[in-house]
Length: 114
Length: 110
Image (cartoon, rainbow over all chains, first blue to last red; front, side, top):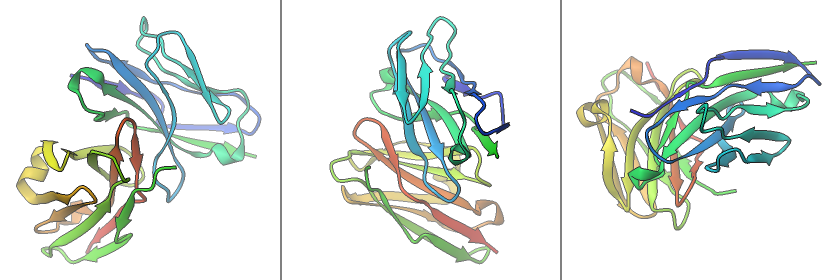
């Protein structure tokens, strides 16, 4: 079945350094990939989405490129800010299912230190 | 931003009691999803409604939960007999395309 893998459970880095959160997936079908961000005591919010191979998508300083050849959708930012500290989820939606049901990864907790 | 509403925000129950939480999806959204989140970590899918009909759910929901969407503007998730392991944040989301989440109901079972 479909699955999403986020290899890092915890990422801690210093403000100003680049961010890269890994996401790989498995699906036999055409799919949308998403990144959601959840700040403490808040609801998850959509950060990025893509279904187009090799096209960079950007929002709020973050970017990701869907690479179907490697089944990856890594989240990147050039310079981390303290406010980026949050829980980040990668998710996929199997378009063949006819619904927008999401398969979530296990999440990566990003902590940015001053 | 889409506005999905959940009530109550906090719920405390004793073991063995019944619990109920409600979700008001974003207007016009035809799909509603429920998730369970423990200790700010993994989002566990519970059940999915499309046009108020349940289309997919995990076994735990079939066995111990009750979930309905009596109208397009209201869904509810209930636990028939609360157990300590049910303590979690219950998130509702709705979608027309991508999913938008409500703030959640935090259930504590004592």
